[in-house]
Image (cartoon, rainbow, N blue to C red; front, top):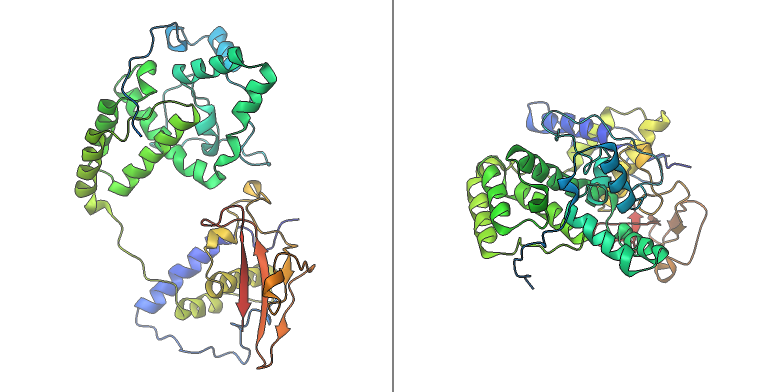
Length: 358
């Protein structure tokens, strides 16, 4: 069963925009809630490898893109399970995100590009695994690295493989030269976008290309001195593309959000609950919400039946399982409770305990 705290980032962003206009405008915001209830109370609301030239052997690029070639690619490339246990269909590419049709790069969801998009070098590496190990072990070897990256990480890094492929298609770069990408090619890629994109954006793209190389056990020349100089230059010229810093979310934002909600509606009550948990629990919003129902994965997202523990027993937060969130009244009259989330950006699969007090 999905948590009621699903798909809440979009309305929260809308309400935050309203709050920013209110805070920055002429409309006054009351410093304290005007409702007789304390609606902020969470319980009252529901090293570098030398550059070498690949051995000139027959490659997939030397074949025309025919049905036989497609069969060859499918035979060499083992089945890769989807990034999510739910079926996520590949969307129609947005404007500026199209690539030339190629059997090596099928139309798949962004999170699956790192493991699905192919190169001749990657195909030779897999063929080496097949010939050097029994078939079952070869497949197990390939699958052993698939779960190393979180779905959001794979989706973010997919932008790097997309932009690099678009760049290579535009300039007619041979498939053999795309992986491993030489340091001149990486410098040219940076130069193509230098001054047009922020330095952090180019750095993120390079991280995606590097991950693509690592997955296919390919030498990476992004640490070459020329590439580092090119990145420094891109950082300097891309300063104008940096977005200004945004103000932090404050109590005034919560007030503005609360005025737009009807807490008698379950969906609005869920929005308010996850907002308070994120704000007072000092959590990232992505740790408490899910972008889409199809992207839900219990390894990363909070279940409706989240395990909880009374805060007085801090030493047993992970062992005292309670079927629902419970509160505990302390000697001073305050309340506290905690629940476990399975994944955070810093602790990874260890997760964390969200502790709320009031």
